[in-house]
Image (cartoon, rainbow, N blue to C red; front, side):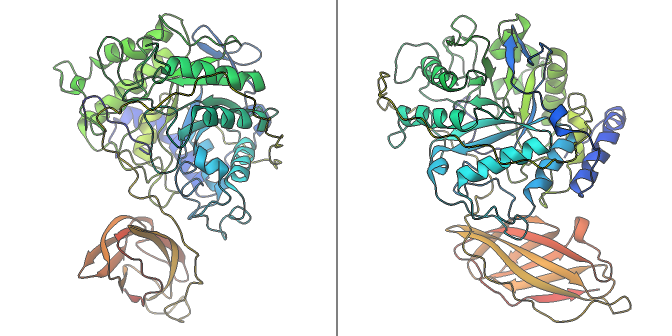
Length: 558
């Protein structure tokens, strides 16, 4: 990793004081109910949505002028080769959205890639859990995510996270995806959702870094100038959207910060658009576990953090220049340093009323984990307790029937006077920290049960297990097991031969190990003990040169 460059394309457990835990207890319990499928409140989704927003000094405001704080969670996947929010291989879309709303968030940040916008199909969607979604194009799937988010009382920020689905880019264009393509796709999306006020903003490009500069005058690298061109193009189609502009890594005084995190120069050289009161600046910030920035080793840590944030982006709010949306922050909360960082950051956000988007809902973010456990359902209570001061308990609205947003025709592309930037030399690359894997599924064969025993109340301890393949790709696979107890079970295990499997990188509902080409998994956590007749869905994600297609499962229980 190069200095000051710790961010990744996909990032992305906490002890806390009794006082904080008490403050969070009610809302964590509510989140758990939502995750279990319960409706917390019959509140109307329509009244929960703020509608179109604008800016007034450093405040985001509703149409009536009331201050509004965006409290978002990112749900990534539509920017990867799956072209679909991750986890839909395990849970229904509505369950994930209900969980996010029940935690107290009011918005989702939805990453996408330009490649997925043009794709004909998505993959990795469990058709049983999400009937009708697997047949949609990614763009139609985006329509559905927005419609269902709205039904759950959630607004949406669209985030252009990557040009293609393979990797993040330093600049807003690449050799394969030009600036013209970037702007035209934004114009298409602005037109598509022009009449959908649940789509409140557009994050123009995720984490400019490397050679990207702010107001340097070089059209091939000047992110401020490019954001102005794109922002004006979007607002010409829909003048009601918020234009979200991230920072750069290297600032004009020579200092470096996170990818997309440097906005020290925006005060003197702002993004000025034809439609006023639309710009929201969006830095990213992470703890020492993601990258060891020098301020983490300073003698005054963590008290020094406020000065760091003030200098890089907080001054925009402190001086009433423009609103700030902290577009990404997150942690696994496994170290004392990370806990101190999050405590300080939550306090700072609470004091300044700055909007934010937590990274991420997904548990498969490699360096931060998520807001739910690997089963995509169990809330990460320690993280939610840490966020409680800014994430006040919110009654989750009962989801309302919501039509898919009306797709309006893509405007005819007109010749652009904007010079097409030429590729510039890349700065020293930063190793990409990604989710443990991006599952690329293949066709799912019909599962074959390994036993025919029927569950019974008085039956001896035993289980049946069914192999349910989810996805495979060149370097691994995701599979689930449907495990049913044939009697009262205290412990259980499943093992199978899997030549080519080298490691299990993730598992939910069980713990797994690999030895001599054989995988052995033991039930754990919420799936450790089973009642007679109980069925659980557990799974694993493995690194492998090839995936087992229908392995013979050896089961044991006591």
